[in-house]
Figure 1 (tube, rainbow, N blue to C red):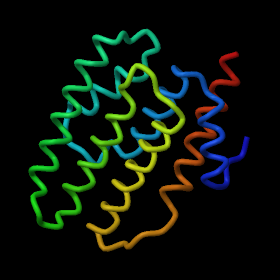
Figure 2: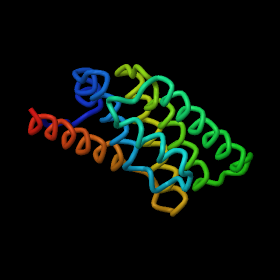
Figure 3: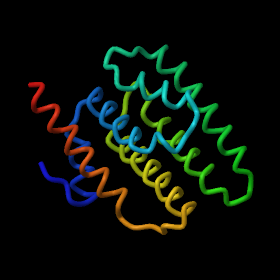
Figure 4: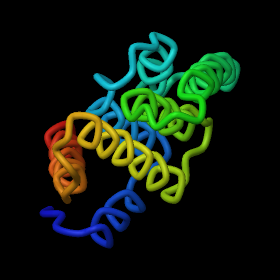
Length: 152
């Protein structure tokens, strides 16, 4: 399946079951994981890819990710610190990923937060913005879907 726009991207997310959607969402967020130094976010994503993660484990991870999100927001203050904002968006994306049930809408929200993180990075480095992150997400979801095909 080739994904060339957001409509196809959303449709592909909607075809996945809950575990697959959580794994795909974690995979999309991992593409922006380099934008946050917070180990709580990484730990949350490590748990999110496990289909056997139970609600209690997810709740603990959700607490850690929420703390990381709040800390990154607090650190940014009211200044336009784009690097810090990028970290905040990654943590915000991870929040969507560590729920027991992830809807296609939740997965879309996480993808948008991860895109925002990458946009912040581009602004911070003076590169400006483009559609690169959306295209990278399309490729990442395509790769994930192909890996599902090879597993079956």
